[in-house]
Length: 243
Image (cartoon, rainbow, N blue to C red; front, side):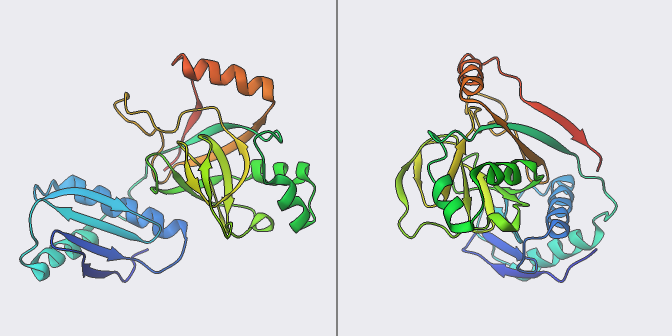
């Protein structure tokens, strides 16, 4: 499925390409195919590509002096992209401890929604989430697929300190804080794994188009996994998905 895209200048060295303004897996797959097409053509002036829910930022190594020419080349690349091109992706299985020591907003969400804490955990951990893009912080995965019954607004006053590994809900999204930081999402648990490691060749294990499932673990299991993670020997479960 091809979309009607909009091409805009974005500063002196970038072009912003926009898809329809929605969170949609068809748009995600279209963005990934377009990115692959750009990589395949190895345009030396392009130094970086950054994607979001419905946009792709093309960053050049110097000032874009001829926007029309650069945009026309990008349009031709988009039109020539193989719509049947298989997208290589993985399903990652992420352990989460929903113990009250971590899930500091579970009680408030339960009261607001009229849903038991156990049911909130069940609904959160039974969904299959799609990684749309990585941003805000290095390794912060923006995930789509949250059960609508768990949609809750962000906090009016963000916390100044959110613990690393915190699993949280913000409006129609869920995500994991890869490092300690300020944050305004509602905290429901914590994962002991590392989501961003600068010592590795690929610092973030996941990429846009991957899928995520959470599975509940006890506090003791959390500590055991954290020990393995700290020792650098923990192996995360994953499987390759069909394109």
